[in-house]
Image (cartoon, rainbow, N blue to C red; front, side, top):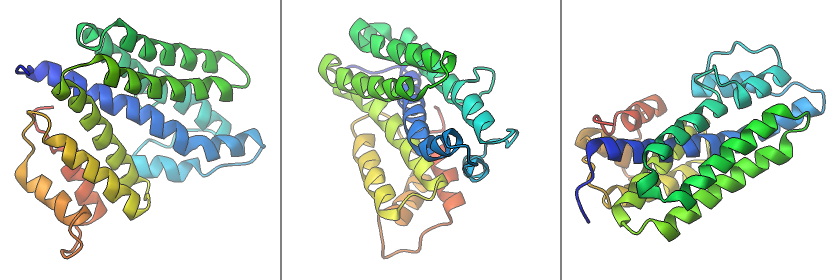
Length: 226
C-alpha cells in the first residue's frame, strides 16, 4: 500500500460524501415527494431547516423539482451527483472504467428523471446505480486504503445527515462506529479534540453528550486538510 497524495485522498473522501448525500437525500425526501404526488404539502420547510438549505421554494412540488434536479442550485442532489462525477472522472485510473460507469449511469438516470413527468422510477435507478458503484468498488479496487477513503466519506456524510435530521440515536451510533473503524484504515489524521467530542457524545454513554450543533461542527471540521 503506497502513500496517497492529499489531493487524491480529498477526491476519494468527497466522492464518498457526495454519493451518500444523493443516496440519503433521495431516501429522506421520498415522503415529501409522495405527498406532492398526492396533491398535498409535505414538510419540506423542516427538512430545509435541518440541512441548512435556504427555503426559497414555492411549495412541495417546486421543492422536489428544484432540490432533485436544479444544477444551478449547489444544494440540489443533481449538483451533488455532478460533483461526485467530477471527482470520479479525475480518479478514473484508480476506480477503473467499470466502476466509474455506475456514477455515469446514476447521472444519466438523474437527467432522465428530470425530463420525465413521473420521475420515481428513474430516481430509483439513481439509488440502484449508487449501490452498484459501491459494490464495484469492493470488487475492482484492490487497495484497501483507497476503498476505505471512499467509505469514510460515505460514513461522515451519513452521520452528518443523521444528526441534522434527528435520526434515531442508535442508528446514528452504529454508523459512527462504522466511521470510527474506517478511519483507522486510512492515513488521514483527524483532529484529536473533535474526534474525542464525537466519541464521548456518540459512543460513550457514561459521558454527557455535546449539543447536536457541536457534534455537527466537530464532524465537519474533523479533517482540516480536506
